[in-house]
Image 1: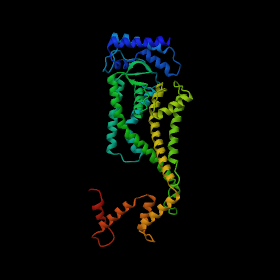
Image 2 (image 1 turned 135 degrees about the vertical axis):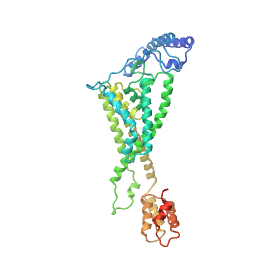
Image 3 (image 1 turned 90 degrees about the vertical axis):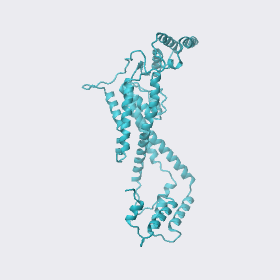
Image 4 (image 1 turned 90 degrees about the horizontal axis):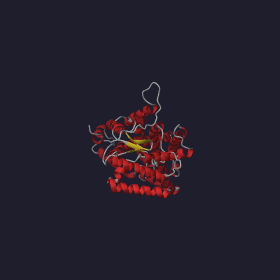
Length: 419
């Protein structure tokens, strides 16, 4: 039976190549309904039977559509068929004209457009012109993408039959896959021009949001560092340098970032297991969460409900940012660990004597200026060469003055920014 089905597939493909004269691109851009229904049945992880026979029947139907002129020619945006009416059900709210999923999708769009302002607020920085321009470009890009996804470009998916534009919920779900580079592949443009447009749009999206994602990761790292530094405030009774830290590696930042990542992954596991309509097993939910947040996105398991899609849009953004912080923390920890393993107590003693000798100039006593140099070299690891440059600059500015003090107006004229 399987050999007969495979032979039918080969015969159908040969007939298409010989008789219809259409390229492989045009056929692959317009898959038939039977093949898509077969994928939908396989997506719930049930054993698929009579695979070859079903594909053969689907190929025969596609050949009839090609001869009838129902499949568009290569290079078109859409098909001559009416849009598919196969939509997934959304949760309607009483007294509102929008569904719960659509309201969440609107909030997602507002969040993306205002991301530069939110980052400036979280980082406790002054809002700059660059933030404003970035927000304008993001808003324009987001508006154009949403309009084209919902009105112009037609998509195909294992979630519905036929070809049609996306709903707002499906649009933000796909946008989040693009921004995080997860790329499940469960929703794709159906026709060549739409495919090319989406391909270029991916590059634009990554350029616009790449800096934002890096900024989010940096903010998370800075917050973690600040919290750790608050616990390590040094007093006048304590030495300038904690030498024990030179022989051990602090795992605090790595543990904190790992906790954030595991927490977001756990939220995903619980959602995909318990949310009505998703119904993944514990193993499937765990697999889907880890593969998604790692941006691998095999696509074996994807969101099947509208609530799952809008949840995934927010969840993927948060999870990928946490993953970036985790990877950055792991790399820093490993680099410090390797550095610590190369050092020993004798190396630290030699380093201390060298810093003390250079700061004091070989003298048995240290002045206040010598101790400041010593402190900078010891605690801030400032190179001796930079201190010499500062000292030479001081002597240069002191030229022509009667005492050993530099006047403030001389500093303003020589060291200050342009007026």
